[in-house]
Length: 223
Image 1: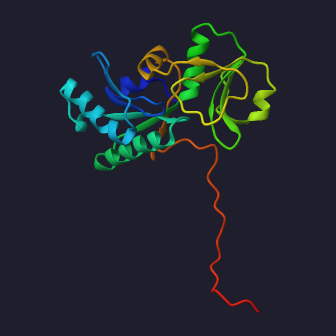
Image 2: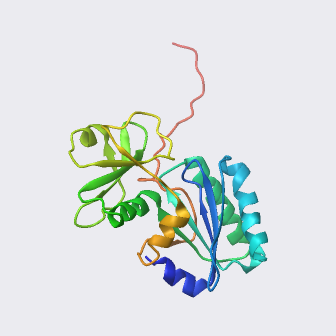
Image 3: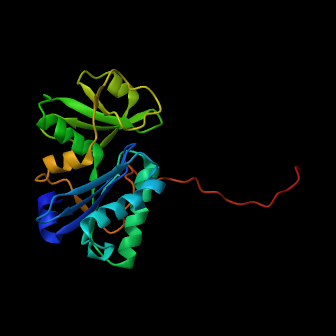
């Protein structure tokens, strides 16, 4: 894993895309220049490419001058994250460049600890099927886990939930809201090893989906 300061020193010009929340956020980071960020409340399919164009136009650069990509792989909006991943894969196919991902709840966990939340506490997001994505901060920041609702409901540590993330069911017990602004969060933690290289950008999944095998059979009349 790498820190943002290391990636920027290595690549000099990085495009950041985050569609995990209800606000799509795109930023252009450059050595020796102020970051450029643009945001949109539109759905990712409508927002990503205009936001990228806005960043490039404001900087006076072309897509060919972008040296690397960073994106949020989740948890968050699966459709938004996959839209971003598809765009990055397309740009990488046109001109090979490295890509790196980070995780939304891990970034928020570091921010809550930095701003004075006393451990232990957890940051959660709806994972469907009676489970929750969860990062717990104790002596260290835990890996991203998938935790059953009942287990979280029976716990005692404070729970935080990003307000801009969709939840389709009530939280297991009362939570506190936290904001999710990628520009602020990434700048505050640019020295933390949060970024992992990938050759195939995609949305985060706790496990590889399993599909039931179907064996076709010729229809026969009942005997």
